[in-house]
Image (cartoon, rainbow, N blue to C red; front, side, top):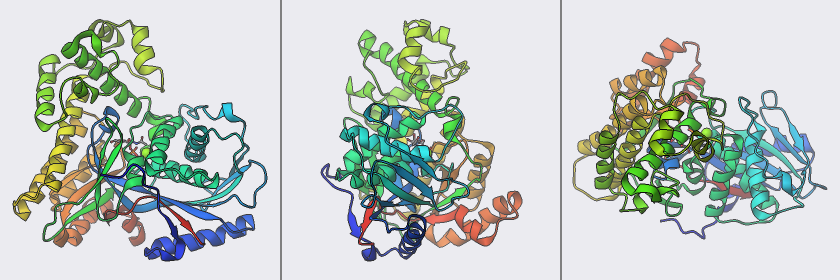
Length: 492
Ligand code: NG1
Ligand code: MG
């Protein structure tokens, strides 16, 4: 279990033993100096993540199992040479991401939500972290900052490019303003403030970015309070390897949030409220998460989750095509306005019908799979290698199936890629992250990795994207090792 008073490590740049990161930092420093005519004071770094299992259940309050990847966001910052509160934010890809500048506009403006329906602006994620920290610390005279960003987490790929940027900005802003916050504080602030950008997101990505430890997956629980437990994967011979492959369908989740992500959050909350009413009567008014169904009665266990999943079958008609607001109003004994105000109004959402059966079924079954996966990692059962591969692989396959059939968050290309990955010898393969595009993660035996990657290149990339160069292919399909979480680099 992670200590709640742990801090993000502050390391000397030359002490890090990741040659690629070191090289990128040195280039970043050079570019910083030529852009701003003075050296940065420090570099903040936060990685992306791949989620092994537990999709779309973090915002329902259930545990998930991601791990940090080595792709990250690094931001070089200078504040010591600055006068006033002006922020200049540049990106090393300056043609694509143009420089943005702003002045601190006063304390009351900090809470302003950045969300603009249908627009995605690269600096918003930085502003989320920046504003989140200033708001949390009640700062009314922040330091000015010059910032230069280098991000190598693929965008819109389900590898958490957004959260790594938000976490990195939060970390940088807090340090520049002389506030050393714990990992838990930075994480909780980042979770809350990423929502300024328009998605009613859960907390998996930020927790993975801040808390991950090299060589470990991270078991993240949200209730009763945020808790991150570094978790070793079962040791097998040949060892378990995870391969990420990008479908190259880009999902702009902020833009589609009203009909995808935010809608799913609403649907799962509506189902929780409904099931809560049926199980506990009127006193479920304060139920905030699906997971709160448990705090009312019993613990989250595999057994109890299976019972709830059964109960969902009794309550809802499987063929139901979703409920209209009017139908929900009858079911929940709330007026349409009450439903709107309580569940829908907070974030942009557009829907004619709300699916309660499919979403709640997914949430209970997926949560159950996470517990089973975690049990495999933590118990020292003597089952043989092949059994471990098969069991974990099956859970991942079921997870994908459920994302596809019940949660409707897959797409044709992802389904095809998963099929090709399984044909190539993966024991399990599934979409990772929010879905609707982005990456798959596959469980592969180490001795089959090369063949596996070649199989996917031949059957997916060569057919669909024949012009990809060798180095581009290395960026779209790669082995990922559990990497370390966020850090601050000093003594540049
Ligand atoms: P990505 O893949 O980064 O869009 C999103 C949410 C997570 C989680 C997953 C689905 C954000 C910042 N992250 O991840 O909290 O709900 O989807 O499991 O929105
Ligand atoms: Mg994201």
